[in-house]
Length: 498
Image (cartoon, rainbow, N blue to C red; front, side, top):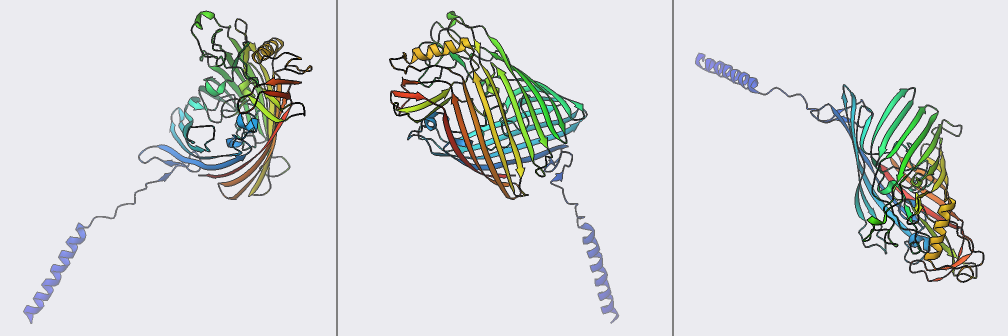
């Protein structure tokens, strides 16, 4: 019995010893790894990049919209097949786009270092007159900010915070500046306190940020008044700046810009204004500087309801028409057709958009333009809102420019009063354009919005009488009377922000 008892006790002691040894060998439970650490320094959505002191925010949107009787993103039927109202026009056009944004910020002894980029993946409705696929990739804002400086592709210092969108969804509200997709620039912003700031910058003037220098010869202007573009390369950046006041009641801003009109040569291809042999020795007109000024106002806390506001801006330009006849892409020319008056095949109205014009061997004649646009934005309740928006723009040519343009237009189209024009025919390249629209939005859940926008566009052209013209196909050579034109479009949109 004693032997059995000893064996049992010994076995128990051995088992306890073994258990203690095994317990000592087990690893200590590790602290959970924090893979995503929230960064609260710069607002909601930022988190720290693991292993760094840099905060990052990922975001963007997915948008689908369709425009009826207009181009993509709410373009009115103001030129091309849409303006001709022919059977090649797309009576509706759609765009689907996903935008992806990356925003990084790092606190340093010199202040915050910020980088921002936006990439757009887009599919547009292919057109019956286009052979290119509808898919595209584009980079919008791509910039670095440090110690008050901005380097890269960003909004111009001339722009308002709302760009060309005081309340509309259309990307084609004229009457003021629009760099919502960014422009290459360098700029510096100084904060003076009490909501007052000032920015000065240098903008790249190429592509979208200038209109045209009209090349006027007896064979250069087509039937709807378009002269080829004789701009040379970029010789100087646009010089831009603003003074801005941000307060609880809203915003006030004054902006200014200087833009160089730099033409190529006197001898060019009349149809395209491209160089031909002998262009360089032919000389060129002397360059001229133009510019523009803008005043902008936003009023918040108005009596109509919480979140309601009014936004308005007005611009005057000389030799810098892009800051008035502006979209998020190129500035349009206008050519619109409708029914005739009984003695003509159809009516036509057109407007030629330029920064300046010249006759070979002559001087640059700067074009004047002015515009105003704005919107009243109202929230019906947390789910429904509406905006009433509009704009008015005018383009004016001086006496020398009008004489040169009309002489070239009449000669280019072989017009002679009483022969192939009416007795009351008169040429005047001045024109006005007006827009008026309303958009209503429904946001059933946060960051998901459905909207519908109706827009009226009016072209007030200054030609009178009628003439025998040969527009582009499929229009015939026929008698057309000059008349103001109108177009109405509808845009529907669904957008999810993330």
